[in-house]
Image 1 (spheres, rainbow, N blue to C red):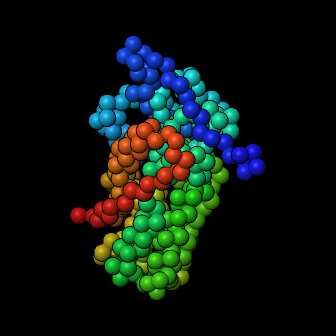
Image 2 (image 1 turned 180 degrees about the vertical axis):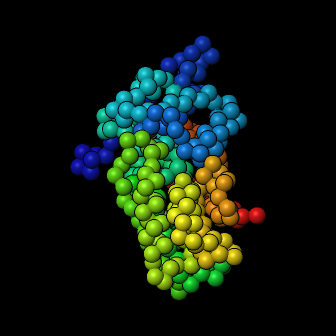
Length: 302
């Protein structure tokens, strides 16, 4: 074990209550790491709804906490007064990680860095890229571009790779417009100016691509504004076909014409995460880590 640096999973002895069960056994914690929660992403509401439904249907109590300081944990978690954990957001510090590793854990959604431990339920980013590419191909686009303005994230990299590869296989010329930003102070913080700069670069491309995949809905309003100022029309009757991703209506509801988007099914990810945690609680001795992908759904404008 020392030679291969193997550390066996910690086994905890549950405190017994009057009913003979551990007092923490029917409580699960949901930690959102790297944010105060003051300004959540729209998709998070669906994720939390799915987690809440999953916990209620399986008779679990749910403890939710936003953890802005990655060096600290809520006391209830540090004392391991929960049966298992759902995690979302940034990677914690190594010291905090060592405390969390003693609990059955499932990460939800894709994170900037692949989790170093625990299972995971996340969007199928490979399918996201493929479906976006297929949509633009069906619209007859012979050229396309990918636009992403975010801190480096492995899930988005998979999304980009799948999009570009599918288009190249279909004989469609594709260009990548990417701004690799520094890690934000808050997990949900983003830089709209970077998206605008990329949209302005798209406008100046000659010849201009006929299709555009905006990797996240939150950048769609900025892109729409830049294209409108350049006199570029969108949609079936326009010069450019556009598709984005996440199905976050607060960003999309006022855009005309409405763009196609990919629903990552965050509520389903939340429910599946609870189900995976229940499985992990019953199989704590299984050392293999499990990652489950949830297929996205294409939402076309009506």
